[in-house]
Length: 473
Image (cartoon, rainbow, N blue to C red; front, side, top):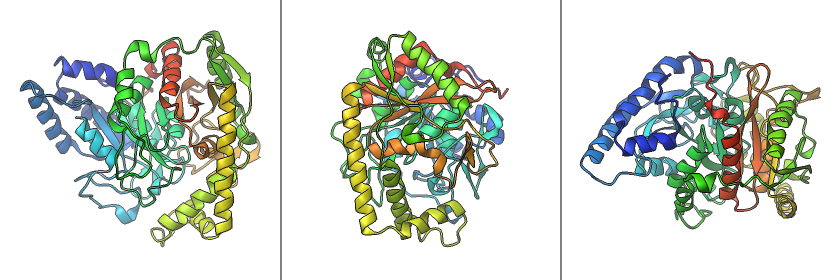
């Protein structure tokens, strides 16, 4: 592993701007890492080396001429294969799009490029991003860098694995039912599901929908904040885009702002089994020993208080199924993925009354969560209900003796939070005795993205698990 590829993006940014390293030098270091590691991990499925080299050379030339360079000048980034990339294959994990090359960039991609980031390639995702296990018929399965026999999670599994394996310092992801958070937990990295509209999505066939969002992934909270400075902000192509730009996150990128004593006296609501969801004992053990104990040691007031998420499960499954039937019904004529086909069939049964009930349930959950945050500053709960499982298994059939009936059941600790619309982040919490990563999910109040990030950064500063590299040498 190169010393450069092990550094966080915030540090690399300073090295680039001071010209201690060049964009070409940094890109080449990451390309060597990809060449050495990716065949075993299968995280980056389309490499754009030539395009990236041209962009890095142009970035170096611009800096040498004294021109103003972008906020993410010279930093390599990988983009999820659900997000369109101009001139670079985008398959959505589907054989129907195996040779699809878009003529435009998705908004999150164009913002990264405009900020000077070097788009190095595309990361693997399950077909159409369905499920929290990254495998598809185009590229196969993505493996966990901490144990190559295990899954990297999903649906941003390729992004999380690429970050963990030091192939890139930054990666884009998306999240409907946990797709940013679950793989972050499995791979010892950070994944933020931002408030809907903070990172607007385009193109989108359902622009008013708030269940799925785009967002940043990185190895550190500071790097997530750095990336938000480029990808957050208003765009009139998204009807739910929030006003403003990424300036608040850019301003937060200093030690005092991110690492103030936010944990002293912090009121933390601790959830062990959100809405009664089963959680594997290995997960609970790590969260208690390495998460709760740390928070209490650092001065936080942690109390057991399960949020009332009644109705969230029905809301998520109903709205998701309806979206799947409407958006993917024609895509899956051949039924290449039985889990997606099942979800589409469920969606075709959704009635107007079902959808109204789901929306009413979602509204009630939101208001109960508003009340929850009148007595707590942050909610802490498991990101994933299990540790990374066998990479050749599509989803776990059992959690602590409780049968999981379908591919959604085991994702509840994430998708229940998706329903609330609140900002949520997964940060590294600890490792099992077998060396498998476990993430802690933190949830903030409405609009509390920056406050949530400050809390996460303070925990990370006290417990910098991102420094623990996977055993890939």
